[in-house]
Every structure is written in C-alpha cells, then in structure tokens.
Length: 410
Image (tube, rainbow, N blue to C red; front, side, top):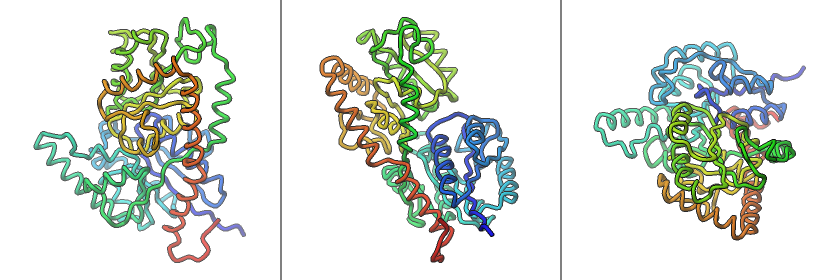
C-alpha cells in the first residue's frame, strides 16, 4: 500500500498581478511536486493570473474571493472574509504543513487555531510596515502597533525564512522579527535549464523591422539598444523612475528603446502619463513572460525603493543581460563584486548617470559588455540554481514536519 504524500499548503492572498513572488510560487510548487515525495496545494485569489497559471501547470489550487479594499498589506489583518474562507479550505485540505507567504498580523491565527507546523516566508513586503521615512505622528503610532503585532505573530511560527540576508537583518533590526524562532535565509533560485530553453525559444525569433522583439516597435532596426523594466507596477517598485530616466536620456540616445513590462495598480496612471507627455521609443507592454522580455534586452533597469531579493535581477543575470539597479535589499547580494551595476537608493539622477556610463561603454567597448554579461551569467549559474534552493527548502519542510523522525520521506 502506497503511503500518502505529506501535503504542503501554500497560502498567498496575491495582489492579482504577476510579480516575483507569484513566479516563485509557480516554480516552487512545480519543483516540489517533481520530487514525488510531497504534494503541494495553493490557496490564492480566485481568477487572478497566479490562479490560472497554477491550474495550467497542474498544481492543485483553490481560489478565494477577497475585497480590493484589503489589498493594502497594512489592512489585511482586517479581512475576516478571506480568513474564514481560508480556514474552511484548510479543514477540507487537511495539510501536514502550512507555508505562508508575506503575511502580517493575520498569520498568527493559523498555527494558534489549527495546531499544524507553520512556516512563514517573507519576500520583502515587510517594508510596508516600516516606519522609515514616516513623519506623521498618527501614522507612526499605527505603524508601531502593527510592527509589535507582526512580531507577536512571528513568534507563533514554527519556522521563518527570508529570501536574503539583508532582508533578515533589516527585519530583526527594526523589530519585525523575534530572535526565536530564528529566521533562515533561503535565496531564490532558477531552474537554469528550463530558463535557457525559454530564452532559446524567444531568441529563435530573429528581430527585424517587420517582426520587432516587442509589439509597437515601429521603425525598429536590429541592433538598436533596448532598456527594459520588469516587475509589478506598484509604489514600491517605482516604475515612475524608469519613465523619468527614459525622458532624461532619450535625447542623448535617440536609437535606444525603452520597454516597461508589467501590470499592477499603477498601470493606468503610468500609461496615461506617457500619453500626455510622450517619450520617443517608450512602450508600455503590460504583463509579458519574463523570458520574452529579457531575450532581446540590452539592459535591465531596476528601480525599487525596497527589495527582499530581486527575482527579475536574477532572471536578467541568468539571461546574460546586464543590470543597472538601486542598491536596495537583497540586490547587492545578487550583484556582489559588480559595483558598476549599483547606484544609491531612490536617486533617479544617479541611476540615470550609471545607465549613461553603461550606454557609452556599449558604444565604445562592446567587448566589456560581453565580459560583464558572461560574469553575471556565471554567478547566476554558480550561486542561484533551483536545485540549491529546493534542497534547502525541502530540508526545512522535513525539519518542521518530522523533528523527531529518523527517516523522513523522500
């Protein structure tokens, strides 16, 4: 008789758009199921892109309905309607272990009520609770209360993971996390063979004036530089900085294309601003698969005010695409030894100057760009494989599920 596989339940009331966390979940579920020693199940918002893509890859997924007024992470703990749906589904699914993603005060209910091992992974959006830069006294009081509650909720967890050392250090220093349970750093990784296959598929489509790499590229000529932005269009990712830099540098580099790829709450505002004040050769292409965005990119411009890890940065590295980024969160860990790729946080003028230097290098010394691309690709292959990430994550699952067992499954 075949033993029943342990069920790992991922809970992520997602934002409705695809970003790094959603891509992480798709990848992690597929890799966990591939071991054939575990079964993954996901609860996320019904009808969103994540829900559809999980179903397409044959991951068991349950959808919940949540109200848009609770999309702000500071308010999610008030969303009793979503929590009731999740608790009902948990009683149906009967998971062996619960893996929470992001979360806030509401996360405390799962280990306290359900008496199951619970793991919390923080992907960087804990910054939404931060008091950094908050001057209003009432807002500081609210943030302080939320931070204390976040700390108390974290104490209920059986395990906590962070996606970078920088994220762990910041959360501890600002009082989000307790010293126990001790948070473990598990960086994201890529299935590099699968990623390369996706790139190869896209790169076989040789760009031409008649078939440009992105829709709307009228009068495109092969070889013209393409600077891309990739991510969720929200306040933390600061896509408006990309627009500002494109506006600033478009006259200096008239043959360059500027491609903003992603969707989110700011999409309409960004698209409207570009319509009202057009920028030559700037395109807002909406959500596109990351490989299709990066396959023909010259450079990724990364502009967040905070970043737990930076999956789009890793995807660019694994594509051999140079990155110019603010030095925030886990990005400097990814780009260790590549100081020429980093710029002071939240300074679009400095970031524009860093990009300007790269563009001049591209024109005067193309071999240097090739060497940089190869070095970034080597670092991604050596340090950030899916196999490394999954080995550590599955060991964490085993430790939480079978703390006394001598022979865990698999």
